[in-house]
Length: 446
Image (cartoon, rainbow, N blue to C red; front, side, top):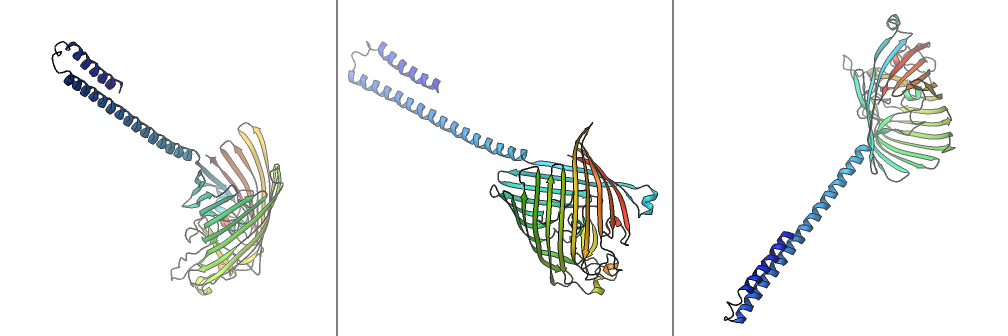
């Protein structure tokens, strides 16, 4: 722009100089005509300068607009980068070794070692928007454990939609060890359902309300939490081999108060309830189900403890017994690609204790000791065998005693799992006898 201005000024000086040198030759001409020519040239120079000024202003405005657009694009990219940085990808790779005292082949081989699981998880936030995802691979099957989209409505309120954890009993797991408890295996603790949940925290109070359209994303048994099994495979004669119930349109609520909030010694007391429709895919009729629990969750320095009492009832509209082959005194549920029977009505009790000890033993930085005990008291007779028509068995009991060793990203669980009629997990017999499984699970978290 400066070069154009200098050209205009040079043109004016050149014209003026030319007229000055030519003045003697023009002396005899009409002076007024000369003045008109000079005025015309000066007007032309002024117009050129005005055009140059306008061009310079337009260029400056375009440059400012481009700068503004660049700034907006940079802010969008920065927001995207911040969102990515606020997302955390984690996972677990785990192997399993076991020794079961009831399995002769297992005993002859001094136990087995198998693939345990591979977990891939993503959690993050973008402003007030939250999200979480947990997908799991096991030996021969896989499933989405949880997957939800959330919104931080206020400092104290969060809403989540998707496959979310049911607000019931002691959270998050309802046990302190590796294997779990009978309430967990029955689907009352650490269960995920498909719906919408609202969580509210205010000081020492925590409140959650939820509506679940269905128990899982699908009616099979390839999922994490135990639920009634809705699909109905048939035998060679075309008869269904299960009851075909599925939990639909469930309401759940939980209220908890923590004594000693904000200290190293806290005691949470919680009350929870859940219930709704129990739809049968064989009869196309609806029954109902309900559960209620009171729990205590304590943290006292290095010590942890949990207590829970649960009452429940499944009032199902099952097909005729000769069609399903399953008694109405039991309800068929499933998880981890496995179906089993629990009493249709009863009470469950669990008690857990844990102790965490930080150490400095080379790369080992923590030792954790635990014991989980649980018990089922059925209302009436209960048999987990022969479709619930087998001989009545003693009340189921389960105990998991063990320790966990942590060294950086590596860990190892060592559990002695003892059970009596405990729902047949690990294919343990339900024969009124005590059976023991030695379980070692080791892997890494990343």
